[in-house]
Every structure is written in C-alpha cells, then in structure tokens.
Amino acid sequence: MEFVEGHEYCYCGVPAVVFTSWTATNPGRRFYRCRKYTHRCGCEYFNWFDPEMTDRATIVINGLLRKLDRMESEKRLQDEFNGRRKLNGCAVACWLCLVVIVLLFGFIVYK
Image (cartoon, rainbow, N blue to C red):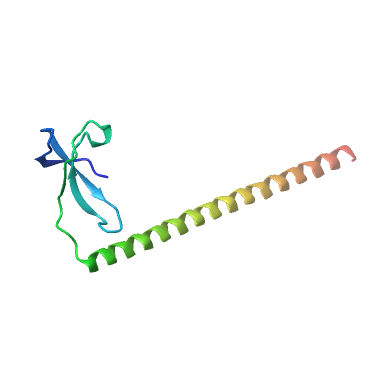
C-alpha cells in the first residue's frame, strides 16, 4: 500500500490517501480512500485513481505476479539451501580440527 497524498477530499473533509489494490481483479490499480478508514472513525469514501484496465492487462499482470512469487520462493529456498550447506561445511571443518587436536594431543602424551 502506498500512502501518497491525493488531490481529492473524502467526506470527512481531509485529503484522501492513494492506495494500491493487489486483488486479482484490479492488480496494481490505485484508488483514493479516507485516511481514517482503518481507525473505524473515518468515512466510507472510495474512488478509483486509475482508469479500469483491460481484461488482457489484468491477465498479464496477474501472470507476472505469479511468476514473481514463484521466483521469490525459489530464491528463498536456494538461500536456505546455501546457508545450510555453509553451516554443514563449518561443522565438518570444526570436527576435523577437533580430530587433529585430539590426535596431536595423543601423540604428544604418548611420546
């Protein structure tokens, strides 16, 4: 959601705020709304800022949003995998250091 001052005034007499809709029917379409709407003391003012999109534009935008969501999910999974891989590598290195220390200590004690 964006909190940008609009040039319209709501029924309360205060400047309306511009928000962005991310619904499937109006993806990315901006609208005016009363700034007090979420506080339950504002009015029911609502007016579209942007003109209505064509069906084709809505389909394309929704497809791009789904693709972006998939890519972000894949990136998150890849980052988790890489983080675990680094952690596993550190664990192996720690165990190797411990084994070397134990062997050196044992070699020194029994010499």
